[in-house]
Length: 67
Image 1: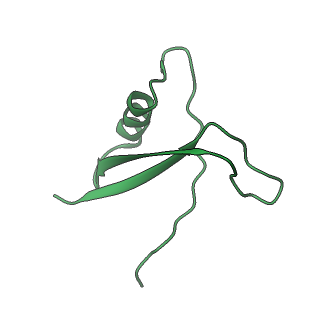
Image 2: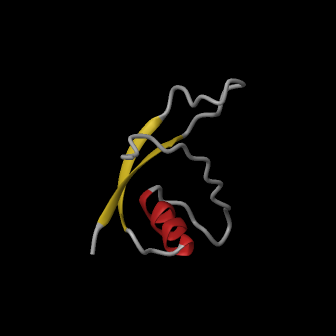
């Protein structure tokens, strides 16, 4: 089963130009067939977010895609 490396940029805001500046970076490894719920739980665990009281809002960009 393959895994996907995901970089998490957090602790700052998106700019008006849809860029994310002045952030902290962490990485997680996700099974390629993992559910959305598992992704949220993994992000919450990595960033020490209490998911029962906070909502994780994911914005993403896809880079380095092989054609």
